Image (cartoon, rainbow over all chains, first blue to last red; front, side):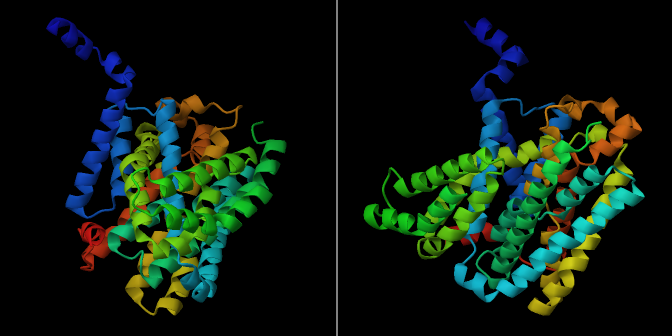
Length: 191
Length: 225
């Protein structure tokens, strides 16, 4: 009996195939990340990304399971929802001009400059350069939001203004992606 | 789009009706389930329309924000569910995409793009933030926060990978990035964005720590109060 248990434990395959062990490993990583985050004062989101980098490169952990991808998907959805829910409609109205201006410029300036840089300095093809511009012009609500809560800014006017501006920036990203994708597919991107 | 607009229009009324009718203390948590249901449903609609599920999620959050201002317990519950169960998977997975061996050959490109992003974000955000906040530190903080980009950055990057013609298996192959053409392709792969992400936002928090802001432990106190 004991021998059998030992054998099944010694085979790492078994561990990586058992859904409970996989969940345990991921939760352990998340726990370590939150402990480190409390110790260092750095946002837990960033520590988790860093832990992921280490786990991926040194422990050879992969997100091969369907359910991990699903949970990650839910994570991004719920997090974005919460970030949206932090924006008080009244303070958005009072700060609308500032948020709009910051949001639009924070999208447009990096998008234009990175696109031109990728096109002319790195001489990438047009669509790759466009995608690079779009990708680098975004602002991460998912990263900004935890940082805001940890810093205690989510209830302040400044925090709400930043979240609203992030939203406008991301809206620009979505519009740009919607605009560039059809061209990309019909164009000669992969040739 | 029409279904989404209708749902968004009625969402605040439905949510507050559910909270008022059942109270916010039931064990079966009807209000949390209701919000998750709406989120998943609209996410389904959005992905069917070839858009991203994150966008309606943000809009739903925006429309129920008024209800949430009155009912803080619901926010705290949703937050604990999200931060305990869902987001670790999201962030750790984002980290997993970073392939260090693939990173080194394209290092100069990454650094130059990161610098460019920081500079352009600063140009776009800092002067405006300065005129609106009238505080140098807050403006810098805003700029650094606005210079992060994980969610939509990865989505934009994944737009390339998710295309069926693309060899997405090459992500963890150290050799693929040695080829000059590959290095170019690497730049819009997700391995770059989480790193760039990590770097600039970590910068943000370290600046705060240095300037003596009581960053540490505030979350805990805020949550308990």
